Length: 184
Image (cartoon, rainbow, N blue to C red; front, side):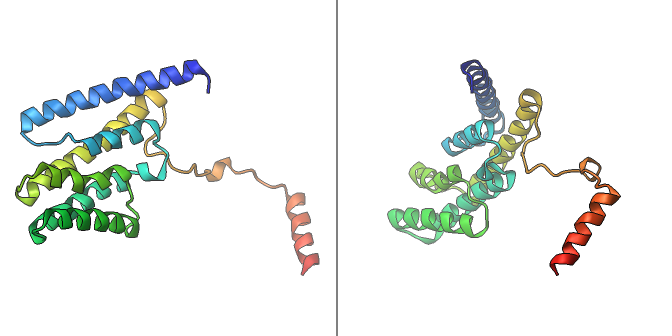
């Protein structure tokens, strides 16, 4: 990629990240919810710069964050030893993300963040901000890519439309059919 294209992409992504953090900071002040976290910042990097990566799919972002946050909340409630609880939550979160096909590496940091915060809050005080933050990131990435890259996020494999497929001539179809009959 030419430097001028990298510079353009880097500048747009940096400005978009700035806007996203400002918006989430205002949302945090207005709603009094901790919707901004380091794992969500890492999610935004993936969504802006690697949107076609399998780990950047909305399902992975939203469910990966919810799953690991839920596991950490359960761990804090059920395992009194914080070191054992953190290790169990972290390992179980990764295992469950893989098993549910929702692997999202930034979400793996949620148990660490929750345990390091030392906050013993009601489960919804962890789950609701995680849901709002991950939904915001997916929506923001969709808007960003629609406006600046002129592509739809989530990017998916391009599916050929029936009208776009070449139509074989009758002679070509007959030749292919006779070859198939000869080989049998």
